[in-house]
Length: 513
Image (cartoon, rainbow, N blue to C red; front, top):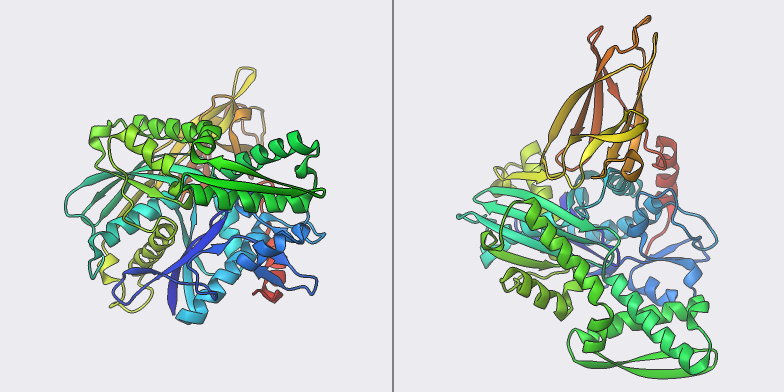
């Protein structure tokens, strides 16, 4: 039985496992590739194809292909029909996960459990959706872990090519700059002997390599309109070709200074020259957003660049030379490119799986013994609060500030607003805004069964907790009777138990290749 780490990416996925000494290695897919495109083609015969072949089919039958599913995680639907049917993001992600686990099992044997990565800036709703996707796929999801944290974990365990995982003897502070296909995170991590501590997190779940592609698509389409007075973006099949061409051009410009971009539409075909300088000028504001976020995380950690010893580039989009140049200029540190930027997150997830297994006693004692005493400390990416009244306004009463060490739990006493009140609503929020409506609604829970004849203003103690993986729990105590109540959070738009069971049955019966 094997453990795996899964980097469930917006545009590409990777899987890793651990050898008998606890060292991580990447597991190729059935095509022998270490990266699997995050694309799903739903065939007319009812089967599904995941990966490069699905991307190819997107050029011919875009209405049957789902991509960028990760950007919809936490939403109640995927947003557009696939093969004429509406899907939830969890279900589509589960199809990808099933394929990844299926390919891994073909090489490793049965999979006993997995850790799935999420962007550090994912809120509770998106984290729950990711875990639900794993369950829909029929996987034993041991845990989830933030992607930059996984990368730093792999760096600390793999550094120097040692025969066994060995964390740095001397303490060092590492900046992880993680620009993937659809999300951006930047994290500061303090590494020491057998200790892994996240100091601060910042990010943008709507910024990634796909946005650079979109700039190229619009650049080429606008040029085509000038020439032909027709917009190639009006045809879905042409749009699919435009994005495929844009991604190839972006990759080419990461290696050479000049390339070309060909657009075919409506019987016309034009090829436009494109230089790296033009590309970088057209996307300068996107790179600036990552720079400002990187500066913000340093400020939140109360550090200076002199306190940072290394800067790690993670994520396929960091192949763009502008990323490394900007980071070197900002930090004064030449970025470390020693690890495979597209594989390191999955490897770190595998290391985390090994740590979790060693601490729980799962598996033979001889396995992962080097990981048994590794201490992992994370922080929350968003402040946690509850909605409260402040005069006529509804505000977010912050209980656990952003970048608090996890797990964390804070209690606060609130008061009933009416005589003989039998229940209290607790609306849980994430975010930094003062106004409740400007925060991210996690969900709400009702504290039922309060004693009869409670006077107005009776105290109810609410306790909000955030687990080490960022998941949220709420408990409450009626201070009058002293009775404790566990309040299950109802997350609007999330999968119910029945929804999960139905989706799991459909994915389980689906033939995936």
